[in-house]
Image (cartoon, one colour):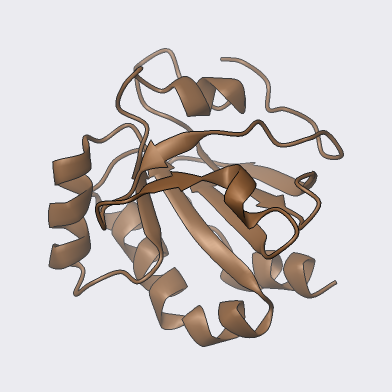
Length: 153
């Protein structure tokens, strides 16, 4: 297991396909919005589903804090789209780090040897720097209020 890239460093840029059919570039948010980069192991799993539904439910608080969620896993794009639909629709971006497999997770130091990413959250500030990062146990539900407090700080 690699180690997570440290807080205070520039967030590695990437361009990944979203479940909504567009390509999302991290650098497009620079100077505009904070980004909650949420790596999660796999779509269609209970803890990940609850995490994504929490972000959708709390979207008004995120909007008020000028933050956008980018949820990343190694699932293929069609799986992310089907998963978003199964969750009742997701208005932020579910991104596919499918090819090259796990490249973005590797860039952030959260790719596992078994081919999935760790459950980890990086808060990237408007300047494109990593302001906060935390890795969780795979079955652990991240504390949304902890992440929100970081953004509001």
